[in-house]
Image (cartoon, rainbow, N blue to C red):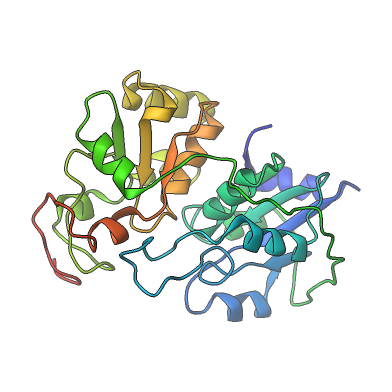
Length: 286
């Protein structure tokens, strides 16, 4: 079952009696207000900062968006009413490039296969005729998920440090080229990249309309990009382990095995005394 669902297919799916759990993962300072004003009918909200991350005292230990424990995320899934038979569909307002892809990865990492990201996000779903509302439907909270371990591969800082300098491995940085080169850094304190990492921006997964490339194009792209390296020798990161999931989503859509997610990403690496490459611009410089 492919992880990306078109807005048109979502509109059809919601008319069927299947057990669909619809999730709104829009992010940013106005996200919860926007959800309360209008959201897709039947959707429930998840918050990137509080539901999809467990903040540490220091970003040097896990980055800006470290994963919660599987036990903590089990409670989120149960709160949303997800059961083993649920078909989960998540959307955001950034073409899946933000919290929707992160939520997708986390649900998959809990062992639940039936989870999809809406291609084009909230705007595409509205345009396809999916009804919206201000109402939030009540949900029964089951207790099916009690996982103690993530079931998709992750990498830690030490593994990435080794892989970035080893020719049999690959570290992929999915951030925008200017951030990779160290010309600008809008979020973290220091600009640049992990020495040895290659830059395959997540935006390259999308066409000019902001929709995912067709499956075969994604497969061709990543077959070339990965240079024959097996998935367990590849580690993918971004700034804080969120947009990296967009690239993992694209790989899954292409039918490829998933590489490891380096959750701490640049926000951990750049604060941990590790070597850095690039121009080294400071925060907010250009």
